[in-house]
Image 1 (spheres, rainbow, N blue to C red):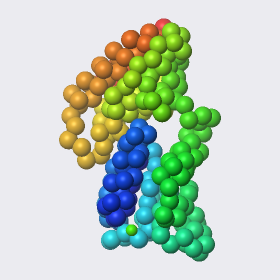
Image 2: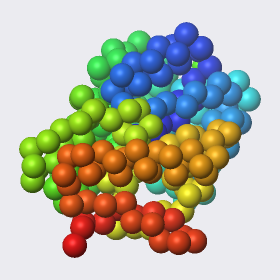
Image 3: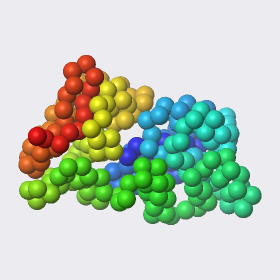
Length: 226
Ligand code: CA
């Protein structure tokens, strides 16, 4: 999962990013309202964590712009102002959740799972397709036909997660690169190709019938082997 974190308190932002990383969730931090809006509109995020009081543009205005653009990305608002009026204001502006500061990291994580699950309508937190599944806690790939399991590297995990959320869909290299390395990253296509080959090796290692198929000129898709 990749989330955008729009929070100008750098200490808090760094703590949230560090905590989420351990849960195999990548958080891209931005520190101003305008940067938050630009990145939120990129379409590459599974969720946006949005502070209210921000330099340049406040969280409510950002949220209204996000919704006005037609984006339904799940948005969790954070604020020190925990009053009822602000909560109502946030929910009316289209927030999926409103988390008053100070919060516990475990609470933030639980909310994030709730709002992203609601969007994808997935019955469980487990990501699975064919005979494979990803274990969010351990970062491992499991194969139910062989009972084999292997630990994935962080980028391998993120890449396979994108495939598992969009099975059988051909995804272009640009999209996959953005989803795994981020919108502004310097990552090149060959990084993607290297990681695709790593993930393929691990799928072979666990003995799964699931394959990453290459469609020349278009991209890659996750398919059940024949
Ligand atoms: Ca703030």
